[in-house]
Amino acid sequence: MLRVEDTEQVPVEFSAALIAQFADVVSRYPEGKQKSALLPILHLVQAEFGWTSPQAMDKVAEYLQLQPIEVYEVASFYSMYFLRPQGKYVLEVCRTGPCCLVGAEKIMDHIEQQLGVKEGEVTADGLFSWRGVECLAACGFAPVLQIGPEYTFYEKLTNESVDQLIADLKARGK
Amino acid sequence: MGRKLLLEHINVPGINTFDVYRQKGGYASVEKALKTLTPDEVVEEVKKSGLRGRGGAGFPTGMKWGFLAKPEGVARYLVCNADESEPGTFKDRYLMTHIPHLLIEGMIVGSYALGAKTSYIYVRGEMMPQIRILERAIAEAKAAGFLGKNILGSGYDLELYVQPGGGAYICGEETALLESLEGKRGNPRIKPPFPAIAGLYGCPTVVNNVESIAAVVPIINEGGEEYAKIGIGRSTGTKLISAGGNVAKPGVYEIDLGLPVEEFLYSDEYCGGIANGKRLKAVVAGGSSVPILPANLFFKTAAGDARLMSYESLSEGGFVSGSMMGSGGFIAFDEDQCIVRNTWNFARFYHHESCGQCSPCREGTGWMEKVLHRLENGHGSMSDMDLLVDVAKKIEGNTICPLGDAAAWPVASAIRHFRDEFEWHVSHPNDAMTRNYGIAHYADPLPAPVAG
Image 1 (cartoon, each protein chain N blue to C red):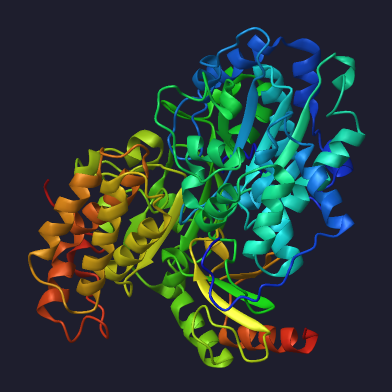
Image 2: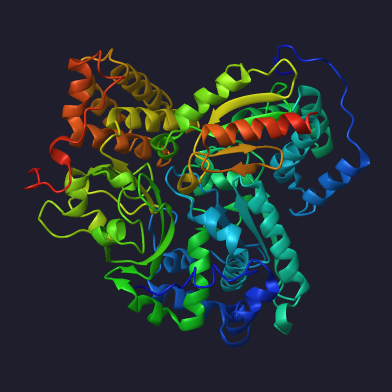
């Protein structure tokens, strides 16, 4: 079991609809190569539950007939899978060179100030987290941020557009 | 003005739909290939075109296809590398967003040429919107009979799937990509065997960049020889350049290879100069991995020739005074930018993205990040520059995959060309964070290039 602090041991149930999506993914690979479905299935799990909890990863291992470690080692390697709970909206701001040439660092400072939490922390109402991420391949529209699970893109950010985005998401709420 | 082979119809309303794309002549290369050419003849056209891999390495695509092993009774795969993550590069995102059918058309022709019955487009996970776009486009192409069983009555079957990554720069390296596609950590494999012999699931596999695969469409439509007439020397055809940083008009531009860099940067057709009327300080011409060049060496080679946007011209002078075409991620730095800070930023990127298999890269990238961080924050010493060069040298060439080189080159080149700026950070620790060293002697235009 991965050591994940502050996580409730809530049993995870996969709905029939989710299982049907898993099966569709598995059908894309040759017989016996169902491990290829691991990354897409972890994305589906995270979209459903907000993060990839140890319980969910164990269930994925069971579904794909893998050892749990095969799932943990993948989830911990890739940067998109959250190994602990996040805010409902995770603002992921590109922090790599080209974005920083046009003000990404100031945007991150502004987000930190507006949300009142440090990078990686969750706001008290549970709505927001934020973090810097590496190059999002959108350098021509910089600075940029994305919000999962749809990974909607927000381009050419200014302090004003960030304020508007945060206000819109607050209005949308939980 | 150059011809647009890939982006000609990019602004046509509805070009992202099958119907409009087809009306504009889309999928003609599939008809031509499947009805009039054998798979080997398709490979031959791509060889004749001189097309070089557009992901960064610049290896001839036709030759790569020619290496594919074809043992009897063993599946073969074409895998598209859409894990676009090289800082400065965003052309593949642009192409997939606006003209997804071009990639799908190229995948069908390429898969036919290689004898693949199942092919995958591995898209970086963050590009979820592009994954949805491609999936919709694939469904449209399938409904129209361009995918699935017995395509256009040719007897050729092909299934095409989109695979999301999980967020890891290293998966742009082709063997790491294949590991990831098999549901594992993206650790690059030791080569040989090359993917052409043992790739996905141990089967012969070709991995090509999005733009390389898209370029197959005009190559088949017009013929490899016609394609090879565009460009200069061994840099044939057109290339998508992602222009970012401090250019006045950031965006994706399709250029004929061989365009003078000065024209690309200053012409209104392309970058439109430097934003806010500022001066150019430096350029990273091919994505963050390639050596950074001061403006003077960017415009003219050390020998005094005007530099061109071509594989050969950009690398003229080697690493002493040249750079590389790379992925075409063009990053311009204006006079206000701090080279030390940017170098630290890139070093942090490579440290974050090192997969950790090889100790020179895993440890070396971390050391470079730490040393650059202290330099940037005014805690460095004069010996730090030599230390960085030493660490970079010890990473370069000593790792399984090219990420080590990619991490070493930006640091080594920044110190080579901007050592005075690093030294200023040491001698003016209190100013390092608040002031900018400025543009100094490497500004454009420089009277005479600095020798060696």
